[in-house]
Image 1 (cartoon, one colour):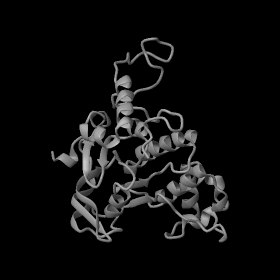
Image 2: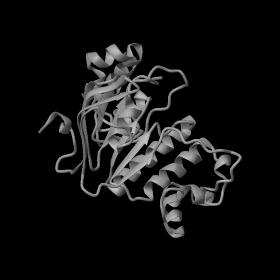
Image 3: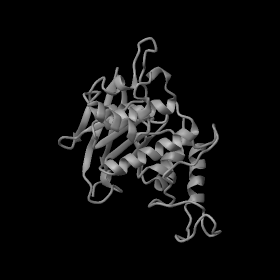
Length: 284
């Protein structure tokens, strides 16, 4: 098994592979020697400081920026659903949710309704995009990405502009979509607690891959601590407190349990732990 396949779900298809990728834009080296793969059924999260090249990496994967070195290999017939970090909508121009859903792709009215229903916003079909809340807009954008019935879902800061409660619900929705569609998910996130609870593998990016692995392994990597400093130490402490044994038969009333469900990870939350604005663990 190669390094880029390590920790991937066994027996799953490799959807996309980047090998030794470098990107130079405007004479500035943005990425160098980046290798990673995303498999069907797994969630891979990119973390790193602002300007680290995370969005450029996603664009390289999608073929939206030229490579100065390396290669990107996609599975034959790969269908990709993409939710960009930002989408500017002119408030002067009338644009309904129904129109946004089919701006760059064809879909029947029933298929549009089906996708919106899947993300919980079908009643907004005729609503003005300009009047949507942050959470509603992100759910519409996710529904738009699902129109293609993607093999790979690419999400660049999917909770941007969403309040804390909305973040938790949105990550739960993404996890459900991943399971129901059996698709791979590549996500950019700034929230280290989300990385702990909602991903299978982490790639820490700062122009190159600083470290990679399961969230618990990355939390203890010196490169991770060098990059994020105090925030990394807070995250490692969070990981330590949640990496403890539990009685699998205990429930929330049993003092031997911790009062919530556990998955395959050492802690394995389906949802991130809420934390106050500005608390360590949110990487800007």
